[in-house]
Image (cartoon, rainbow, N blue to C red; front, side):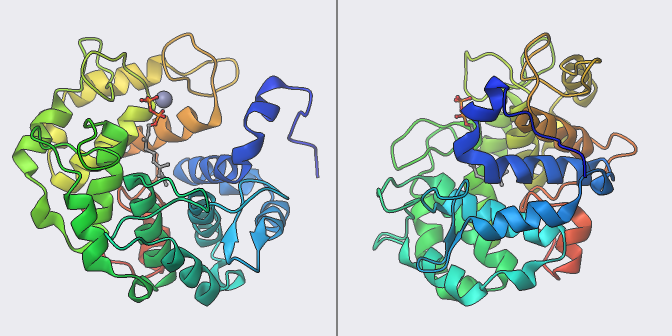
Length: 304
Ligand code: FPP
Ligand code: ZN
């Protein structure tokens, strides 16, 4: 096997703490291109196994680091893509996720206790993939996410926090999994999401911010669940994402001319697929996994 990491590169070290999610973005991006065979799965699955802390039941972002709910979701997603969920101790992971739920239904991400609707999504998605939603109080989880809804129809990280498109993805997908879509004002939120498109076609995450390719995913996933993608100019958005691709490396950046990375490359591919661009595999907007994986797991399709 050839060496496909360069430890002399700056990016290798600045992303060291989130290597697990990096593997997920790379593998899911390859799956979106129907090119999963471009990377050998065995060393990646071995890496996932090494990040597991059997005492806690969670996964870390890298070998020897502390476990975190976000990396636990990435580990489960990687295993799901490779049809290797059997190597996950579902009971232990479910107990770990349940241990992070608070009395108000919210979730903390790790032992440091930060509450954020990102973690509500991570918890619900992880457990849905493992078929273990019964391990938590789903109604309380839904009620907490609903309490983070704002006057503009959007959602924030905690009650009263500003609406942010990344959190909107987390909250809408969490509500879809938890059966709480009645808490979403679909027209008001659809309008807020459509307003995120700026004149050059890209999407921003909040009013007055610059466009960024990753918002193609955070926003298109939500508009796909709400059936409001047609409220945006899909052609202009597709052209914007393509203008962020670097023709030398093939990767996609946040904005035209910026440095490419695997995060924006995955979300660019996933966004293009949600726009219906030919030749790409659809990434399910709720579970953030290739459609075929979601089908294989027998999970319900929660978008239109
Ligand atoms: C923007 O972050 C994105 C979010 C707040 C959502 C992050 C969601 C997760 C980590 C859940 C897991 C996601 C998937 C797809 C499985 P940012 O810090 O870049 O925001 P900024 O643009 O305001 O800086
Ligand atoms: Zn970005």
